[in-house]
Length: 121
Image (cartoon, rainbow, N blue to C red; front, side, top):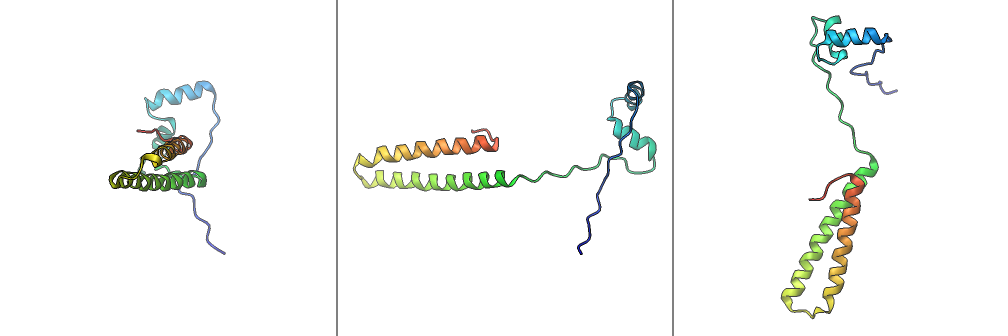
């Protein structure tokens, strides 16, 4: 059976009246009440705030980001192909379809970025 990971910190809840809360805030002198209480209760310890764990992105966010990266690669290759066709002097009958494809790529890209909560540049 695997060992269970020990928590790096725990939360202690304290009920108090609004007056007591106001007194704690006054004594904290601008600090967060939890920081003040920790320093008052454990003066010999290092009372620096505990580091917060970084939140891992959801599987959906990771999948959207991968799709956006692949879309960027495809768009780059498509743009290169369009430039090569232009340099080779291919007939302009392909241009409308390339422009349509590029427009659709940018629509998909902006939808993915909106889903990820990323601002476009």
